[in-house]
Length: 394
Image 1 (tube, one colour):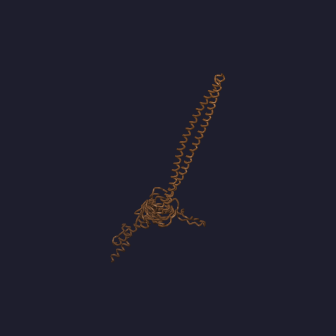
Image 2 (cartoon, helix red, strand yellow):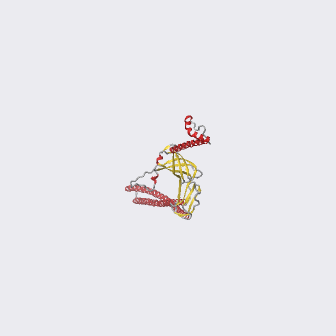
Image 3 (cartoon, rainbow, N blue to C red):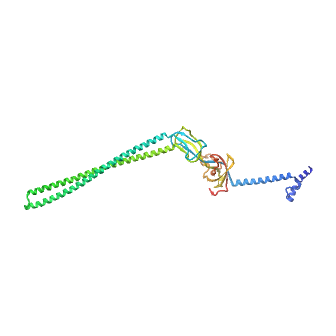
């Protein structure tokens, strides 16, 4: 016991002197326990210094954000038509594929309206067919009468030319006999007979000219009948316009029918339903909400004092409150161009003149890889962004 106390005193009194002389931490005579304690203290001190250095380096090179959460394109499906909701064949949390039926609205009234429109279209088509048949008949009749009227006009003109030739011959004969009568070569009776024939040919030529006028009037009358076909064509055109309007109504009704079956636009998971089967829905009324679990990211609000250190492409480590023992990696993809206070619904005026400066925050989007659908919109996360990485300055 006395030797141990002596050793302890020697260590306490002579250790500094001997350290200075031989730079020894453990002078001769010290016990093993004291040596172990000093080793432990040295190791603890070195660990503390290293930890402090690591912490200071991390604070200098990383930005730690607690105001962040998981986000996604959450789509709210609303009714575009009016009707009774027949079924919602999905439940909250169910995974759906693109094209799956999510909600069905009653189609009976819409189908009846579609049948009515199609019946009206058929009636218009039948009326068009009737008018076309009538138009064809009128055209055939007019074409036949036109041909006959043209032939009649040609015959009348030919007859007049013949009568004109006969008149000219009769006139020449009358002039010849008149000259002979003056010399006494022919009798007065023959001259009178020739004069009567000449007058007869004149009257025949006049009747032939009148026949031409009659034939021309007949041709004009037949040509006027062609307008009936034009009127029928215009009626057909009007019906075609009505048919086009009905076709547009039919297309609109088909769209209405299609909108009564709400299908998934992408693979996703149902987040919430807002209506039940049997309810009456109207345009704009929300039916359900879903999102694509493969397309998620982190929305973080960065202090403006740290914003200048950020670059697009900077790597980040994400810790989810729901999974504290797991780490997710990501990269900065978007940097906000306005502070979050600019998006507030209510402005923050300062009429009193009292001003308290508050550090603003800017939104930053971080792309993160989904793992087993663990990341869900709205989850709170903590983000550590390595400010030394990235290559695109905002």
